[in-house]
Length: 399
Image (cartoon, rainbow, N blue to C red; front, side, top):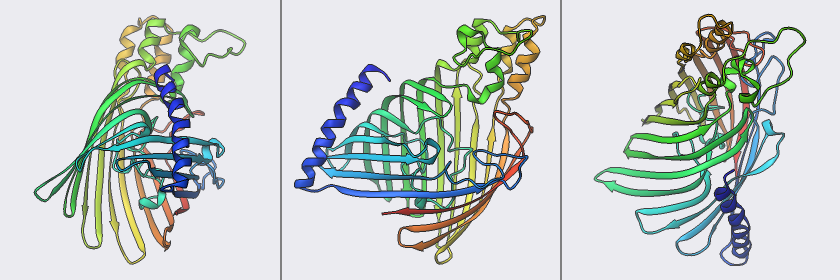
């Protein structure tokens, strides 16, 4: 974490906790919470997919959270969110910690750690009760990070019958993900939402400078020289595997590279139907990152307490074969590197059929079946890409 962002958060934490404690004796702290218990299985011992294998698992996608909100003054408020995730052994961490200042009926400002406004369901991504799937389409909702440390400005306005919400943001992020360290030296961008009656749309764009783990190119890691490989381990006895040069390693690893993310979303709500879709394009310059395009379209029917739905999604990647131009044809590492780059081809289609049932006020039961069809199947021990389906059930709640 950068010195500035670490100092800012460490300074804000006791300040906000003091404000919350004071609010307890004055205006009061509003507490809300959410949680999801999810079980899933591929039903096939030879075809794992995502977090799941043939045995039923509960932890990977189960979570719980609590949010504390308090008005500090007439225009200032504080928000704190704590979340525990099964994939992290339910360790509790501060995910949101920010102050909000409302200037007038149009402008508001936020500073601290908060959710990045990338997608339609960014703000409620952890609140499973807020959407019809068990998990939002992974072809779009697969960022290496969901939060940022910085500031944002929001401008709300009305143009005729159109409601407009424009958000500008700038910040950094330095944290550890399941795949390794994620370091965002800066990110700056906007999101803009428009709504008129039954139709709404959303556009977003941001630019950043990133260092992210090359978990999507695991086959290339053993080819990196020790001085460029943060995951270097002693090799087995026998001839050493050929290595790429340091310059090629720098072209492979996404370290301090410029990145962009662009997205657009549309949603149409009728009497008993809802149709929605999102499209995103992520790009990291000068690296083995595959610059994926992800999109989906989903149809939902509202039938009493039931919400049956069907979703189609695509994930298209661009293996960075141009890196091979930096390696001589006679170099023994070239065919190994070509194979490693080829393994980053993760083009796939996913079909999801499911139903959400509103069991009670604030509680919903969901059942989903998702089938993923890879363009190229790869039986990789680290990141297998095998055609498989996942049957999942969950209970989501809010309070």
